[in-house]
Amino acid sequence: MTHDLPSPAAPLKIGTRGSLLALAQAHETRDRLARAFDLPFEAFSIVVIKTTGDRIIDRPLKEIGGKGLFTREIEEALLDGGIDIAVHSMKDMPTLQPEGLLLDTYLPREDVRDAFISPRAASLTDLAPGTVVGTSSLRRSAQLRLRRPDLEVVEFRGNLQTRLMKLDQGVAEATFLAMAGLNRLKLEDVPYTPIETSVMLPALAQGAIGIERRQDDSRVAAMLEAIHDTPTGQRLAAERAFLAALDGSCETPIAGLAELDGSELHLRGEVLRPDGSEVVEDALRCPIEDGADAGRDMALKMLETAGPGFFDWRS
Ligand SMILES: NCc1[nH]cc(CCC(=O)O)c1CC(=O)O
Image (cartoon, rainbow, N blue to C red):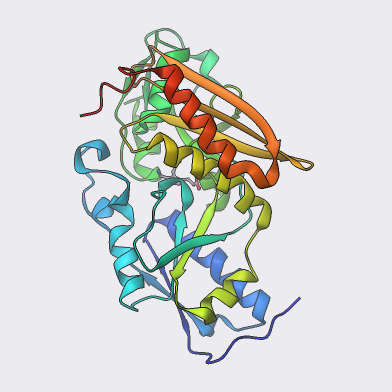
């Protein structure tokens, strides 16, 4: 189905970070829009924006700051008209957007699972006690420490190629990546094994691409409506309400996932101490349209279960 393009038909500027994954996501967005409106690729331009998070690559992320790190410059460009839409990995996005911006368009979600990456081992259970595993994710490291306290977790930043090189050099025996990233980059020669969500619950919104716009841009609103994926939106409404109520920052290991099952939504959530010494988990089923309320309520209940002190590591 093609749609009539709301006029005027100026080229649409698509803002994105410059990583290979971000570019793949921007291209997917452009391709879906081009198909929906039967437009040539020349009707779009892809604008690469360098963010603070991209610039600082030699320090752990948790030292430099919260979640806005990879989005601030992009949202500024959106607000000042330098770009018309911004394409994001939803799992990196804060739950609140700046005044004047809306983030409510989602492309169909990719595989939500994490992948175990190792040139020498097939799965977590293959690793001998004391084995070094690299990750820069607070969530993955807490989940690992909970389930395999006998392993040694080391900080592992850098792009995908850097991390794979570190594995080859033996700096660590294994690491983790989102299946969504592997699939979107078509990295078939990376030695990976998907990890079921019952073993490692993914980050909230993992595998989902979101498209942000100016609230007052009705032309863009009409265009984005044509490529929005409703089931992904329903799942993310629950997941982001859960995250918002938990006040999730990069300093809190939180995992969670909503899945649709007929007319029901199934939500699971997990909060951990960074050292893996404690975990609070919960799950619920509700009508799909109640997902956001249920996500918030589940978060509040989990906060109560965790009790004061659970989050004491936060400064
Ligand atoms: N935090 C970085 C990040 N943000 C989104 C993805 C993967 C793609 C996705 O989950 O949508 C990744 C890399 C990773 O976790 O392996």
